[in-house]
Image (cartoon, rainbow, N blue to C red; front, side, top):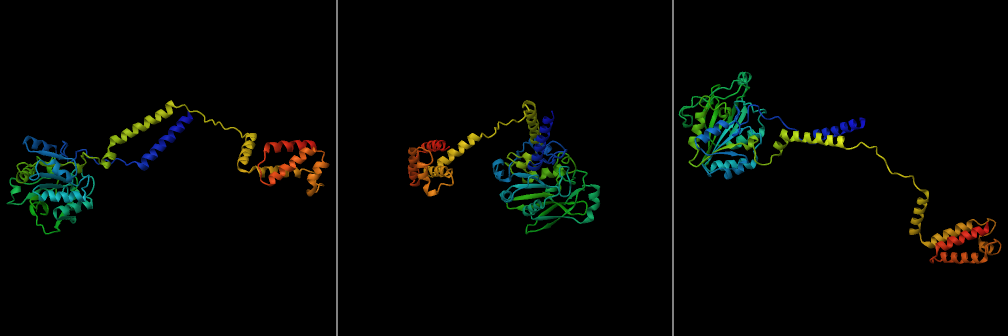
Length: 405
């Protein structure tokens, strides 16, 4: 039982370490009140606008790809209105920005709902500097946080009204734009960075700073709002929010144009998005269940056996035989014969002079003269490097050793 518990603890620790070090973690970036996409019917969604457009038989499209796919989803090349919400969960690429500018210049309209002077519930992080840079490139307006004069509004969370300027056709019938939300909101100051001259359509009731702009671009235009919540399900019925949106669509949409919701950059994509894939809690729940099932399989069905080895002690005879086979394969037979004969001669009595040992073997050793002369001939052949039958030589040496003893 202890072995199973130890195996379980070590395996679970290894899986946890792998998950912590190598696997991306899900981020809780979804708001309980919804996201600004066309399919969301919660307070922060755009489901009310989507349904209203359907009831009015106005073409509507959910864009779930990058901006470069706009020609594929729009029913007509011009006269379309694209609703973009900022900040974006999936930032736009530089290539998208250039394509969007070209698409607007062809005769289309972009309505940008930027959460600058309001703070919807889905806005969990501050603006990325790159996103502010994209706004500047697209509109020619640069936004910087206003000084501390708006500190009281930030602390109280008051989302002030936006008052229309008199004589603006897009503001006809609009009493005021009313943001939604009780979260603290900052005030931003806008400044021009190019030669384009925007038309200010509305200003903040607090301080009179511009809040809604109209920016012509080629044959099209950009309508920029510094508040995003008036177009949400909770905000569209308030004040003149619905009237303002209706004015923009009636003025800018062509007879064959559609209203396009930028759902892709808010996370509702039809293409593979690695960040969204790894952030999906369903993926992590699935991996967790797979890990538990694997642990149950390993610990429940596999017997915990003691590891036994089939190691055998080394056989000395096999070692000697292997060494002999190796030497026999790599050492020339003549060298082996010389070595065997030298070892035999070294066993002779030391009183026998080296020069007379063959004569002593034949005459005084008591060994058969015939065997002694055969050994002398084999030695001569070995000295000459000739081929020698080693088995015959070994047999002869064994016989001579028997005769000498």
